[in-house]
Image 1: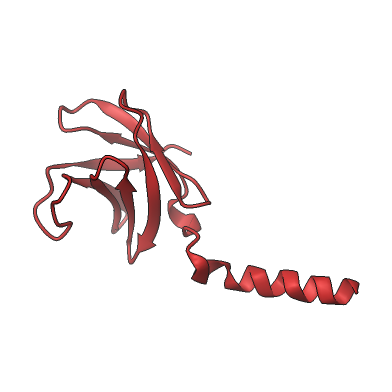
Image 2: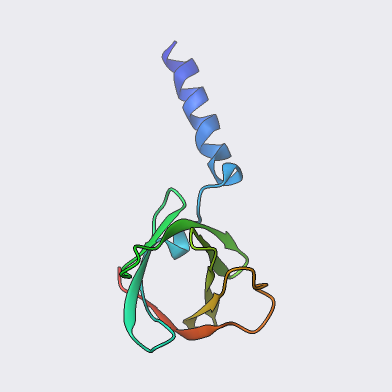
Length: 113
């Protein structure tokens, strides 16, 4: 019975990336700036949830898409944190705006933790 449980656990661990869990490279706390240049933090959790230290209490979900962590906020906005060579950038898109268009806001992004 122990071997069966271990086999099931190993199978579930192997499936985890394919069932929507966020990639570990982006997990953690990121220092970014809003459109007014005010600093705030975005936390990307291993379970795919996201939160920001903003007065409006931003929460959402995130997933890795290529070299970017794409965050879908409950406000309708989308934020991307993208690896560009040896640094990261943050871009933000308004509700209804395509992430393929010019962002409403951009700043550098630095991993704090």
